[in-house]
Length: 294
Image (cartoon, rainbow, N blue to C red; front, side, top):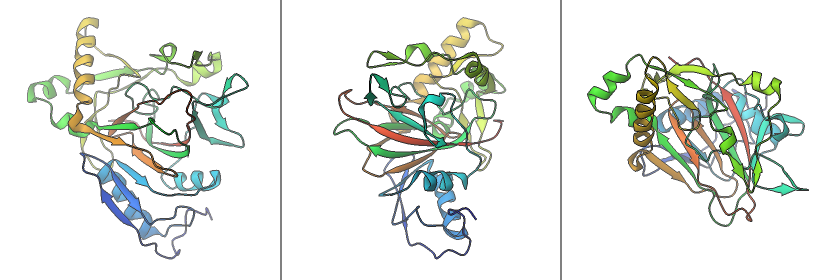
C-alpha cells in the first residue's frame, strides 16, 4: 500500500487556520511523512477546496513521500522540460535560480507572469504542491489570486458578455519572453512542442467539486478569445487580466523553511515575485492532473 494511503493510521491532531485574506489557510501539527487515515485526509481535502491554498508548515519529506502524498489527489503530470526533472523522480519538477557549471539546475524564471499551471493542456492541473528546499534571505514570495472572487465581483453586463466564451491557451505564448540571469529557456525539441499543443477552454469555468464559477484566463498562457475580432479579444483580455489580479483577491505567501504549499489551479492564478539572482532558491513541485474544464 502507498505509504500516504492508510485508512487505519492513527489520527493526527492538527489545526487549520485561515489567513486574513480572501483565500489561504495554514495547517499546523500535521506530519505528511506519516500516513494519513481517511478522516484526516478528508479534512485536508475540505480545507483545500474551502481555502484554495493550504500551507503545511515544517514538513520533512523525502521525494518519495512528496510524490506519495501528491498522488492521493490524483495522477501526476510530468513537465515538458524534462531536463529540470529530479533525477530518479520525474514526477518532481525543479524550480530554481541556481546555476552550476554554467547551467541552470531548474527553471529559474518560473511564474513571473500570472498563470494557472498547465492551463495550456487539454486536461489542465487540479493543483500543484511546491516544497521549499532552499530559500533566499529576501524575496521569493508567491502571490495567489482567487479567480472565483474575481468572477463574482464582475459587473453583471461583463458576466453576460463572457457567457459561453472560449479562449485559446498556449505554453509557447510567452516562452521566449522568459529569461533568467541572461539565460534563455531551453530550445524545445519537436517532440516537446508536440506535447504542448494549444488548448481551448471556457473563459469562465465551473469548479468540478464545489460548483463555484471562476475566471479561467491568464496572462502567461491565454492568447486570444475565440470568435472575437483580434482587437476586441485583446482589449477584453487586458480588462480581465487587470481585474483578476486586484489586491482584494490576493494572498501573499512569505515562505518559511520546510513549507509545502498546495494550491488549486482550478480556482486561482499565481505569480512568483522573484528574488535577487545572487541568493539561492530551490523548490520542488509536483503537479496533479485535473479534468476537462467546463
